[in-house]
Image (cartoon, rainbow, N blue to C red):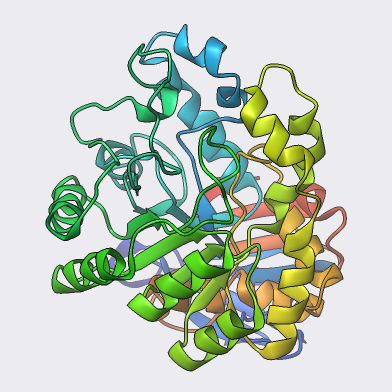
Length: 408
């Protein structure tokens, strides 16, 4: 037995992708008490698990996910007639699907509250560890404004409850106050929309939201409170304003232009491309249950994000994996690796984006993201070639989080 009666577990006979981009090598992995102790050949322990024919990866990340939301919520009429508490009871299944893919850490991009995070931390729910943004700050009439023209209050996206403040804010003092409010509610990171969006009915994704001064006020206030800012941004101007203001990451980046790329390189801004979300564009455009103004925007969209990603990748913009699930349903997250590898990244670069790069974006690189002694024992046991992404979800054999088997 290890120290203090803990069990030293050794995964033997596999190959290791360590998260840094170094070549895969034959090695065992030993962990105890939730931490990796050794990585190398010929290790021993109290409990040996034969993983011959498998690859061992650090726990994966999804840096843009909405675990409280489901794809079915886009049917706003149905969502508005469900009981308020219904959404909470769906959460365990979304958590299960995410963990089963080997995703052990996420950055929730609005919807999850401090109660969900604490339930996972306390073991009440089994799920990936979380950084949460609570809600997405939006201008009046912007991507996060759920106002209904009927006068019937707000749509399902705009429902508030204790710990879930409203999203809308305008002007320097108001945006500062809203940042403070979401931090009070438990936000680890501040999420904003610096352009319009596609899944909101009354705004234009190409146009900028928030003035430069408002964005600078948001970033400064967040920094004063020890928080970074992640910015939903499709349009080129909304991207550039956010980068100039000092946001940590651009989410989506659909119409990122050459000037925006240069700014991101200059400022060290991260891109979280969420390519997977584009897989459902045509399906949603044809779905009569989705409001017509949204469908109209989607019909004209195509897949510009793939060209954007190729240009950003070629330029060397820093990339971390995020999916925007459930725009594509929960459980399809690893499709992001396929799309990155088809559009400018090597498979190795794609896996780095989902491991060490994602850990760096989230500021947890001292604890997670690579397979090395001292890190948390988040380990994915994957049958076969780790770089063959097409059928990857079906080959995840076992997932450990903090040394505890949570899937498989």
